[in-house]
Length: 105
Image (cartoon, rainbow, N blue to C red; front, side, top):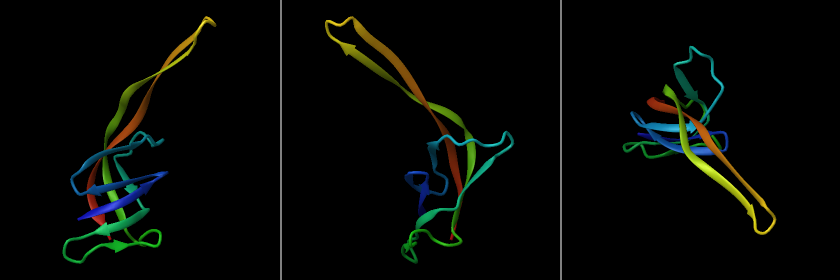
């Protein structure tokens, strides 16, 4: 069984037991689970897919929070020739790593 969930502007295809990462959210210190209420589609081999308009009512995906991770470093270089101008900055995006426990529909 799989589900397509929406989190902010991103959509993810998840299955039970899968680990994936999403954009970082501000959560409390004691939070151990994360619930996705905006489920767009649930696919099942026996019953076939169930598609929401735009989301399925009563469906949710429950995931366990594994921790916060950082993505790869992105280097931004600006340069203007013959103007004595160059800037170099970097950025590392922070993500939240999750493991899907169950898909309810």
